[in-house]
Length: 97
Image (cartoon, rainbow, N blue to C red; front, side, top):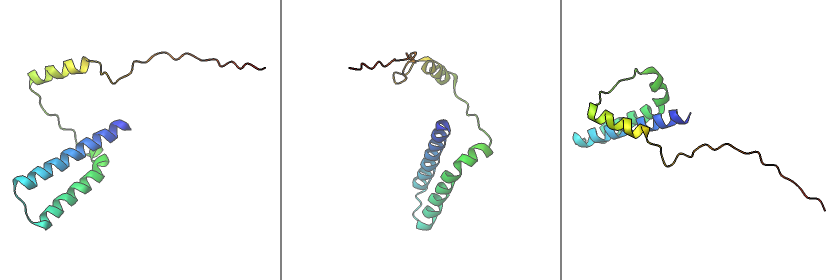
C-alpha cells in the first residue's frame, strides 16, 4: 500500500511540474486557461490510482553509462535500513514479598 501511495505521489508531482513548466514556458497569462490547466491537474491527481492500472506502462530507455550507476546504487545498503535481528523472548519475573 505504501508503494502505491509513493507511486501516486511521485506521478502527481511530475504531472503538476510538467503543467507548471508548460504554463511558464508558453507565458500563459489568461486566468481561464490557467484555471483549466490546474483543474485538469487536480482531476488527474485524484484519478491517478485508477490511471496507474488503466494506462499502459511506458519504458524509458536509459543510456548504458547511467544504467551501470543504478546497479551499483542498488547493491549498496542504505544506512537508514535497520538490520533484522532475531527477537529474544523476554521472560518477566515478579518477586513477591
